[in-house]
Image 1 (tube, rainbow, N blue to C red):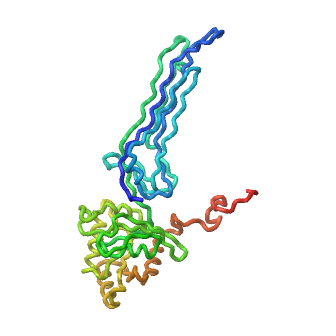
Image 2: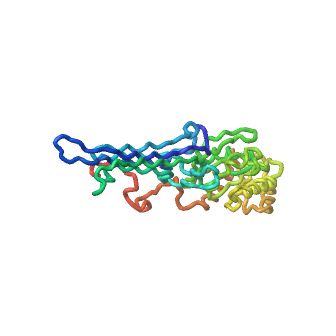
Image 3: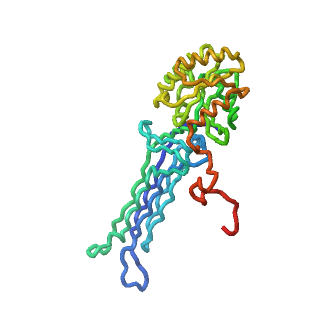
Length: 355
């Protein structure tokens, strides 16, 4: 499945059905009169966050969404049928912005969250509703109200507990493959990762979601390299893991570049907790790793974790530090007992004919 995190779509709610102009004329009925019914209501446009989606690729092939109009009124005081709502499913983490991308109209952060973005038009009145003591045979009626329409942008920001950042070729893909169920592409060249990757990490009875984004280079905030477009996918992370290649030209400079780009992003990410990891220590001697670690601490890092994504060295200590920033239970973890769930009905159990 292709990854798409931005899409522009057109939405239109349904128009209301027109009211009817009708008069009762039946054999052997002495008195007739107006009996035109009202029109039905048009369908709303509803957005709903659903599980199982992590891309907006569906909106690449369908950009126009229009709800149906309400049914027209009929004789015998019959009201037209109201149209069904048009429900558009989006991934959790989707933001809805207006056409100029300045205003956030909705932010879907939880499964099942729904929003009526456009309301359908009201149905028009039939001539029966205009009958009065002085207007016994009205012929006026109302057309249904028109539906609302607008262009919106959908922007996906993946929901993850921890995020990986670093220069290209810092070993982020190797790391996420080693600690999670992700299968990111690994290559000995820059920008191996072109789109964000998600993986679920299981560590010491806990689990959390880890996000890997394409590598950043100096000037990414101005569009250099792949730019900083994918930084939005780590905005909601509780902690960032900054991987630094020990075989790079200058690990301290590498940390400075990433810190600068995080601070230059539209949402200042430099305020998020960060864990600095000196990666690929299996390719260097211990004395070099210790020296670089001391330099990174002098440059502002609180603690440096020497690790190797290829061999697993030091990874356990790093994951222990990640758990310290997570809540008691992450979104992917399920209650273990009915007491933790708060209600026995929330816990899955085998079916029984006595239930």
